[in-house]
Image: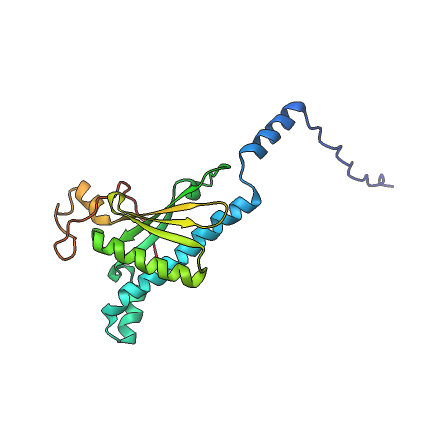
Length: 201
């Protein structure tokens, strides 16, 4: 007769060495707590949602009350003033450490961003954040950095920096765009420090 089937031996408990304990202790010292990670995810999600609503509001006058035109503009990111938003830096790479309070997003514009557009984005963003979470955030303009900052009023005091940029800047660098084109109303365009691509809103 065939030999009886043997049961799989139970693996002995893994031994945790002193070096493992040191590494685990160091990891707990530098890795953010669950509450900190949740706060980061909350502010990023709220701002992304508010930017989407702000983008719809900015594009609303272009539709002139025509629902079909409004739906077409909403579906085609190329026809939008604000074309997309992207997580960058520590948030995108998942490299947040305990104590990191500065987060970054990039907001892609169809034309080169101007001070007027920066003010409009800040105003609409502030309005939408009040709808999402009243009194939780403070929005400030930073024209010198072509950016808008969103600071939380909670104990964590997170600061989310939104950089405004445009594909036209990159086209200039590659020789496919004109040096002065793309600005609206003859305004001098802002020069963001970060030139990246983005996903559509």
